[in-house]
Amino acid sequence: MKEFILVFRHENANGKVSPEQMQQWMKQQMDWVNGIAAKGQFVSGTGLLFDDAKVVDHKKMVTNGPFGDIKETLGGFVIVRAESAEEAAEFAKGTPILQGEGNTVEVRQIMTH
Amino acid sequence: MTDKEIIPHLFRTEYGKLVSVLSGKFGLEHIDLAEDIASEAFLAAMDSWPYKGMPGNPVAWLHRVARNKFINHLNRASTFQRNVAGKIRPEIIGNIDADIDLSGQHIRDSQLRMLFTICHPSIAETSQVSLALRILCGFGIQEIADAFMLSTETIAKRLQRAKEKLRSEDIQIDLPDDGQVKVRLDSVLRTIYLLFSEGYYSESHEAVIRKDLCLEAMNLAYLLLETDLTNTHEANSLMSLMCFHASRLESRLSENNELILYDEQDENRWNTELIEKGFYYLQQASKWEIRSKYYLEACIAYWHTVKTNAVEKWDRILGLYDLLVSLDASPIVALNRLYALSKARGKQVAMEEALKLDLKNSHFYFILLADLCKEHDPKSALDYLAMALRLCKTGAEKKFIHRKMDLIANIP
Image (cartoon, rainbow over all chains, first blue to last red; front, side, top):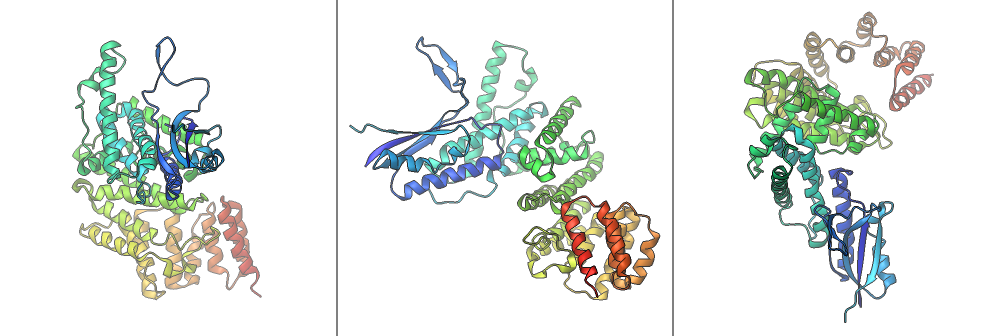
């Protein structure tokens, strides 16, 4: 089997959602990951914190960010094992992150050798 | 990845604790910062738990993260202050130890102080309830709006104004002086009861939210009972009253969300555990030799949990209402007393007294009149219900009145 990275892009939810909603989303994401793991196809993953994020440009300028024109930014990723990009994309459909309009999951194969 | 289940409402509960403790540190001026730090702790959990599994002790994990964020914030703020002096009040940094106490005792103390602060007389009662839900119970603006059936803008404005008031009046997060505690406790209890009643009586279609409001009100009352200073006759009475009422939460709504009146409730769906708790707190309350309004109401609620229609039961309830009327002259108490009177002495006696009352702007009054005369004078009963229909406001009540009219009209 090949390995694929599923990259989440979503809005920074801080301050906009209630603790109860955060817990619900987390629970759904947990169930989603556990479902993939139950098939033995989960490799690893993490969310990425928004606070203290920096962007370094080609002139080595460091800015706080990313606060570009788009609201959706890199929020985390998981790595899964799958036979094909199609199968990996099927996995991606299950994440609650896609409940947010504008949010996306990008599916990319990882080079293993 | 463990298959351990996350505790229901964990974030909401911890939010109230963290914001109370952090605001105790920063002062009310920076309550928004306290709220941000609490939220950030949950975001950190969202970024980690789904992939690495639930930590062995989720609460300790959240507290550790919140403490680190707090310390980081102080460090950043003091650097900032050195560089751009004057932006943050110097005493904020100067007086704060670089740590927070998250022991159970300190959390409870902080929440209690916050509860008393929110119930400051300069804050309107409706705002006190919203603030309590937001700050102490960790509800989101949307959730509060759903519970009260108001727009999110209204709730957001209400919260904003209340927070500004707390700041502009320079209110400290603390218990009032000994003499004042008793006075302020009255308003704390009123706010808790209001919160409970919102859950118990509101027509919000979200049955889950309604039940949550009741449980949150009971949690706040529990805070009072855990501290000697506030473990009073009234607090125990109110807790008892809420337990008895809450025991019927499941049985008073039908599957299609229609109100089921006491007489028609399935007693098997009453929660016996809550009835026992209610009885326990009633006994606690009776140690003081006072018969407060909450105490009388709790006694009445107790008798309602007794599954018999014996005259003795209604005699007792009537006696308690007679006492309550002298403490609380509100129409709703008068009407409830009449209901008890009809059960104890018959509908004829109750009708005679009812007609002496002047409550012609209350639909409950006309519903009661209709109930009292429907057997021997169905025509008048229908007229009374028509008047009730004109006065009532909610859809559930209208449905309820229509059902009654149909029943009476079907009598041959």
